[in-house]
Image (cartoon, rainbow, N blue to C red; front, side):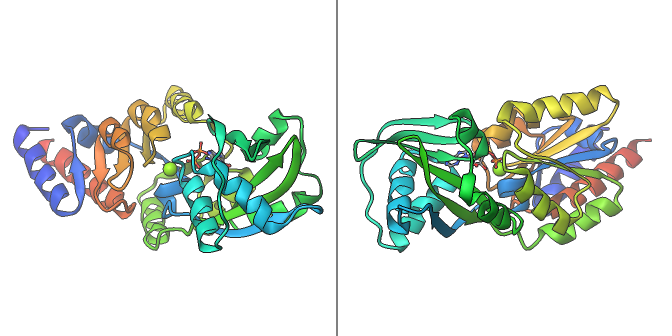
Length: 292
Ligand code: ADP
Ligand code: MG
């Protein structure tokens, strides 16, 4: 495209809330046929809220929440914030955890009140040789509602679970419909559990779901699609999404997301709403039409 047409598109984009970082993104976006979207913070608001604490027999709710929140005070993950805020709202006092360790894509571990505590997803407890046991059915029912369930492990045994809900952004359903109408195949890639991802994906008419994805896997999923000849755009907001945003033919960051995501992307959606992608596509088409 000519410098002039790029400048015009950049100006129009900025007015419409789409920051266009480079001409290549604009040029390449016209050819994109596949859109990968992160779930948390991209499709959803990314502000999860604690909605349930379910203890195993022999434990109580306040105890399970105290253990979970004490540990999560050491984490900056949005799920951690939800749990800490949930404990504060319920006036559950927290202890100082020690030996804190974050397990990427799985959860957290540490010592609370001199006892070993872990908190995280099925992969985390599986790694510890544990199973959901009696709580599995309750966990699945929660996931089918789109909630994210985390197990709380105390001294090597499941003590209970905590569940958080992260509402879909108000603008997401209409934006996804418009993007489908533009002909994109839409794939959700998330570190979250498959049941949770499917519950949300089904509501939104997502074409394909890749769940339980570790951060390094998102970029690999994109590379595999590219190897098959697909032109791929990736929309994400997290630190975890940065490698995938860089790998994609066009990276699209949420302006509400992490700085490193924004730096890795060709487009930034200032308001963090996916409808910005519809506008970006129109600008891309108009720019490329002008130069032919
Ligand atoms: P995403 O941002 O795509 O949802 P993450 O890789 O950040 O994925 O997290 C994947 C999963 O790992 C979460 O759904 C959760 O089950 C677990 N997890 C990660 N960090 C934490 C944490 N601090 N506390 C509890 N669970 C966590
Ligand atoms: Mg995210």
